[in-house]
Length: 480
Image 1: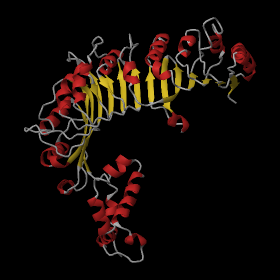
Image 2 (image 1 turned 90 degrees about the vertical axis):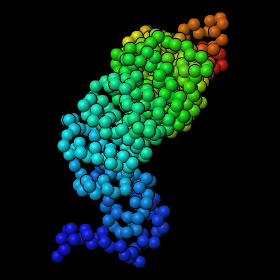
Image 3 (image 1 turned 30 degrees about the horizontal axis):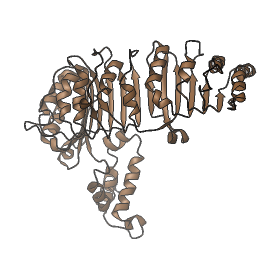
Image 4 (image 1 turned 135 degrees about the vertical axis):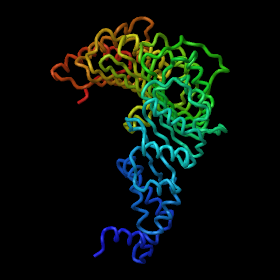
């Protein structure tokens, strides 16, 4: 009887095509599509496909399948992962033709012994095959990496570096470029716990990057926003920008750049920011990104003034149909939806969040910053995680929504304050019913005590009656 190993070898050596199997008559292009469909269904993908190399089983079926797979290694995301744990047949793996991914982001000890040997062998002898580098660790481990990576990496596409503590030293000019200072071909860069001053020179050479993520500190940089803008100016292909400031980073007062200083990122579609408002104000003062679709902005602090952000947001070419205001604990946020996102019940792709603090000031400043965008939306949804009180300037807030046709409120234990704000000064000389002039419908969320519904509806009756007399009827009802 054959052993399991003998059966495995027999399968690998069987290259005959059975005429009775339909799959053997499929063209190579269709076989590739089937393999790619199978690949996309692997879960968890990184573990099974990229680390455990389950695709190898497909290469053992027959010669045709092996030829299709290895001829399409880029399409099928084939590669070999080298890390601190010793893989089987390491010498065979390193001697093959496939791209290499270096993954040392989970190591928590000093890199020594065989783990250091594999890292050195890959970086120095096989640098022309390295496609991805992911590294996390102490300063001592990073010093080893920096010394071993003083070469050109012609196929390197992705770089992820996470320092254990703030990295203040300047990255060497020869890092990943070699003594000839070859151009970086990186597409994706993620750097965490770094000083902008230490990485600006490196970023200036990354002109092909499409995805940039930075968790940074502004220490040791006299003008961090200007430094970052200079780097961004050399990234015409950039599509996604993630910026996260270290908490407590120093920042400069707002600046007022001239038109010639403006950096235009025409391909940028995603911007995500977590940090201080002054830094973002200084950054967008010199930035234009009209193609933005995915926007997430969250402030650490209560922004003292918003001057440049309105212009930056107004240049975005997207048209928004609905807005969702959320009151959560001490936070306040605006989320904007396009017509397509609204129709398909998709999660909003534009979100602006305040910090815990002065909610009243956050509401006023954020609504002012979005004023132009809010003026054209047709649906307003307000969600409460706490009972609204008199601190919310409803009248001032709702004046930003002249085109709203549907107003939805949910999550509150009572809505009478909203009703009172709607009626305030209504019908006085000069009012001309301009306040929420397009409003047609008010939908109120469920109340825990259903017996309160009648009282809540009564609170809206004066406003409804005034609109009815003016020939602009408004319907008010509870969501069933």
